[in-house]
Length: 316
Ligand code: G3H
Ligand code: 13P
Ligand code: ZN
Image (tube, rainbow, N blue to C red; front, side, top):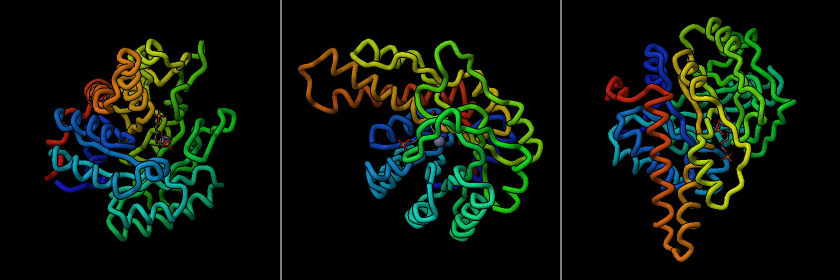
């Protein structure tokens, strides 16, 4: 099976009350861990690449790793650019084999965001590629953009119809209180998401796929392994899984996860290095990291996203 766009995935996810996992990839072990889990559970999948990942691993290596994953796993996979900052990076990914791109104009004023998004949509649609855009700002670090919690702003529901209508975008990321990274809430702070905003947005955009960024849960298991093996990640806090399950049942069709993969990979590497300081074969620690990545993704598919077995619903 070749790469697919997210169009059919989102339609089925919307109607079926589940969400597709969009997992960030940076190297072979991460690609393998994610795709082995999704392959065994027959789950449709989005693999996403940030500008930082392209800088680290290079575009062509990442595309070829994903193509290899398609040879090894008979599931629909979309290859997506995460947080495209400008037209040029979107164009480069569209021309370079991606089936989906995000143009993140959320830091610009409304009309500028529309103008930029529309330009990307026109170019992408002409080549059969779909586009995600963002309205509202999440706190946290996105590549070169560091949005502080004070500057993060929720999506304003009264803007979404005009934004989608004028841009022709295929899906919309909204800000309802999730944030990037492993420190999403302060210790003692009650995790809170604005489900009222999500509901209002979905009422205004019936049938339209919504995207949630910053959706790692920061599982205690991997933080504890990291802490027990020389790490220092005290006070790491993520989005409670019950909230993500609630989102997945709603208009949210794509849930973005990166930090949980980083924690899992780091936990495996730290565990082996700390317990076996004599080992220096990278395969020995990377395979444990890769197994933890796979375990995390299995858990998400089964317990959070609800997309186990859903690849069977997609046309071949
Ligand atoms: O949204 C940000 C993603 O976690 C990607 O992070 O830009 O460090 O690759 P990165
Ligand atoms: P996390 O940092 O919560 O994993 O979010 C990742 C993300 O939104 C990628 O775009
Ligand atoms: Zn994001």
